[in-house]
Image (cartoon, rainbow, N blue to C red; front, side, top):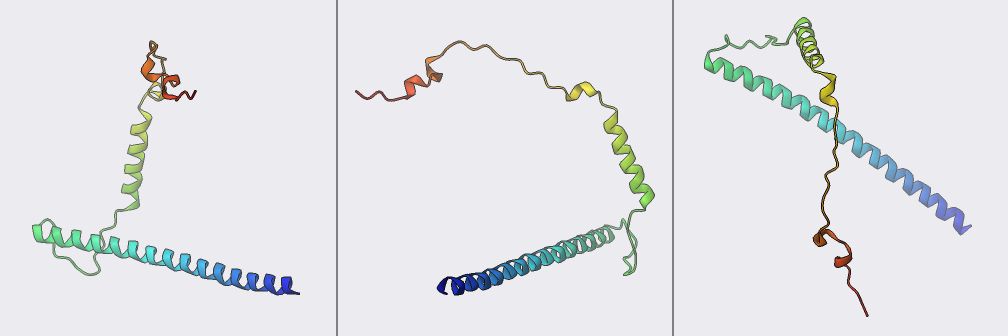
Amino acid sequence: MILITALSTIKEEGIIISVTGYLIVFFALLLLYYSFKMASTLLRYNIKKKLTRLGKMPRIEENQSFDIPGQVVAAIAMTIYLEQELHDDESNILTIKKASRSYSPWSSKIYGLQHFK
C-alpha cells in the first residue's frame, strides 16, 4: 500500500516537473523568436535612418518597402553556385605524408614513469 502511494506521488511530481519544463522551453523559444524579430526591425530602421542622414536615400516613408525581389536573390544564388563549381575537384583531395622522425628520449613514455623499488 505504501509503495502504491509512493508511485502515485512520484507520477504526480513527474508530470508537474515535465509540464513546467515544457512551458519554460516554449516561453524561452517564444522570447527568442520575438527578440530576433525585433532586432531585425531595429537594424533595418537604423540603416534607413543612417542612409537618410547621409543623403543617399530619399526621405523615409512609413509604408516604404526595401525588400529585394526574388529574381535578384535567385540571380545572386545562381552566381555563387556557379562560382563554386568552377574549382577543380582536385582541390578537395588531401595528401598525407608520414614524416620520419628519429628516436628522441624526450618523447619516450618510459622515462615519464616512476620506478618504485
